Length: 245
Length: 245
Image (tube, rainbow over all chains, first blue to last red; front, side):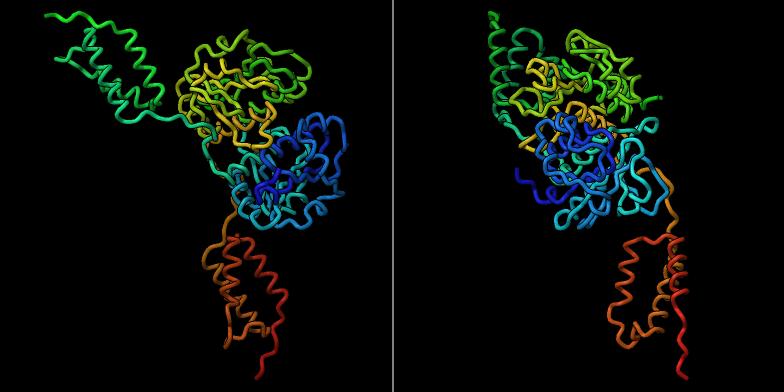
């Protein structure tokens, strides 16, 4: 796995994590968004089978994780440190949304190491820890219950980093071939002719039937194959009535 | 807790969830973003102490959860069903990013029920299940490892719903009072005077010293109190030198 450069420059620092399962789930969350550098500051238990189980196929992130004695050690070499906290505080550190923070992180990570710093499950980050960072990022949440699980918060932040890098691209996949103008017009012509023939559409008083049909199918942005199917259905249904002579 | 109307209109449907812990973690993820309607289609084990443990303080969501025999039952009354899947498929259902899907979900949920449909941990949603939905939403992810944990995927989707509703607002909190123009100019004047006085700035050859200082402090967007502190520091440091007479 080769990471796009800015993502390879982002480290996730978990401070004093209590549940090893959360370390594993955070590793998994990181890998899904192509982050790979995990730093653990004084974890309660690491390595731990719970962490490996929750990491699923991201155990490589755990194996490469660095265990540090304190936050200073984990921040060595970092140009931009972003504290992640649910609590709003009156602090010197400027507070921004996680989306804004992700945008700034990707800018800096083009050239220099960036760290996302997450606190303990129960107490979050200490004021001293936040003050070692240059930004405080908050995930907008329910004012009555803003307590995201640690790995869930890592997932949201990692997702926003990836979105900041790649933009909101439509998912890759086979884009079906749309029907061309002539095919669609032939379909409408056939539909109209058929409706007139079965007496559903009165050419003297057409009302807005055809414009409404155009609106409906226009919204659907018909594919080539769909137009063929629709014509097929109509053809099968439609038994031409004997014309009055 | 009173939900903002559109969020109260969104239900999360988990199909054939295998690990009860994931059900609990999904409930917690929902509550952090103010979603409350959880539907469980044929869960392996529910209720379950693992679910309650992982739900943390979101057990109310579990208590109100509805268990359904199949997806049709869970989708009853829904106007827009969004399938959530990591896999891209060649299907009739239009595929969009989770951000785009969240925007559409919030639009519809102003007036009508919306469902987010998540599949089993191992197999995801079946093709039949996806085909009961009108949109297929994908979370952009690492092409080599796109396997988000179920609750992590619920967290990202719920977060995007909330962002679609509230916009990317700056976090609430006390906004510090910025220094006014005059205060800042007085500070610069004092700084310059002092630097000339100590011989650091030569008024005959000022180079770009003051413009650089302005650039630095301008970027910081000085607060009122900070300007006072800076002036205080300078004043304390600066012992006026005896003028040559």
